[in-house]
Image (cartoon, rainbow, N blue to C red):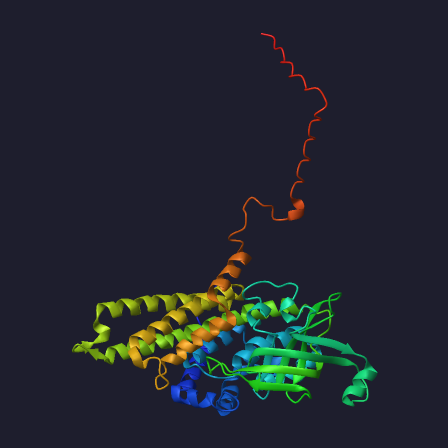
Length: 436
């Protein structure tokens, strides 16, 4: 394995850092999150035209750059460094892999090209605060109970016959699906042109989870932007009031498996993004303590401050190593994400402390990194559950004496019959005579 970055990867990182340094400062970030879209549309189009950022991991046959998810992770390290508010995570890391894996040939040809050019954005909608569960980041749910489980709540889907569908929407023919329910905490759901909605169908008899495509102008779709802790990650509440939808792929698709695979790749991308944010928070803190004077000397010259910064540096570098390894091997994405989120939380917290009272004020940007750390752990964690799930998958706490296959375990010996109390006691065994 050659862990060195290629010339193309280095060029992408250098160009992206240069663009974001000019267009995505703290003041620009605060201004972008106040817009209706929650991000700078002009900057988004510039990144799409110059770098092909939305389509960096989309095959060339669909108009993408044709790079690996590792290249997207390296790019997201730079976007995390600037806390770029954009639909990149929701579109490229969550929705594009699902469409490429589950979509039919016609659906891939119709959706992936506009997603690659940035003309269309997408969002993944799952019911309730269950994004980490749906992506199998904090545990395996093979039954898909998070999507509704046949009970009231969540998002439910029902198939309609051709004549009923025609009468409902006036299309004049063709069957389809209708969705009803709601989903909260949908990343960039208020501005996305396409929604991938995870819905439960089949009731109890044929319970299963499927993914559906819903356009932004679908009748009965109600979207409202939510007030959230981290405004650089805008979220929306999605209400589906008997909305017409298109099934992604076919009914026999392994939706839960595709979501789990997407979750592992997204975890590696999120880990790289968190490492970029933590590294920048640390760099800004070092710059501040070098110039802030107390008792006639810079506070960065005190030994206690040096020790704290050294510990942060070690933790950020360890998280970077884990994130880079996960970019090469997404199977380790969950563990790398836990390491990176913890590094970001600790670094952002120390940045607040070392900046003093000004750290957690709107006039200063240190609080932006602290809010990103807290919001990401709420969305994709918490850290201890990410690590616990990684340990379960690795079998760290499995019983070493238990057989790998329960069916191969030897059958227990039948219990000996209890003696009959009415029968005479058995005579002691006669000792065997041995010739000497």
